[in-house]
Image 1 (cartoon, rainbow, N blue to C red):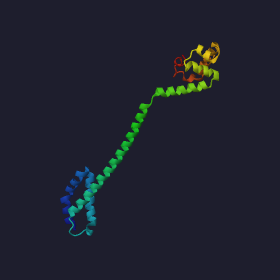
Image 2 (cartoon, rainbow, N blue to C red):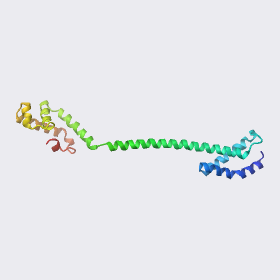
Image 3 (cartoon, rainbow, N blue to C red):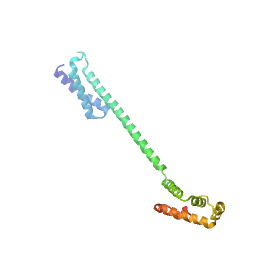
Image 4 (tube, helix red, strand yellow):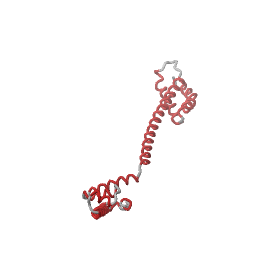
Length: 184
């Protein structure tokens, strides 16, 4: 095909092909590029085409295929973005759920209970036993003395010894603790 015939076809169909492409891909610059690439592809390959080739249909088919590729690529991109968004949303939801389930009071209560338990284990066995009976079993000093077969003064001594030791052992945690509640 000679250049004047090509120019005539180009001028006649170029804007319409751009409009066609833009209608599908919604981007004028990309539509113009695809149409230009289609015309260029036709021009570079015109010698290999049959003589009875419908040139406008041929170029429009190239434009159509470029638009289809573009739209399919957009779908893939959108799917990837959706997957990324869903993953990020899931991670955010998990963080929110973990944070909502977090009970600082319980964390500190468990931690403090562990500290107290470990401190009590450092006491001599008889002091531990008497202290546990007093504070955890809610027994009176008189009941403890009777069960242990010791004097009331011995029970008082061991409870006082345990409280002094625990106050010293847990002194760094006094701002957090209300020992008057833990040690009535």
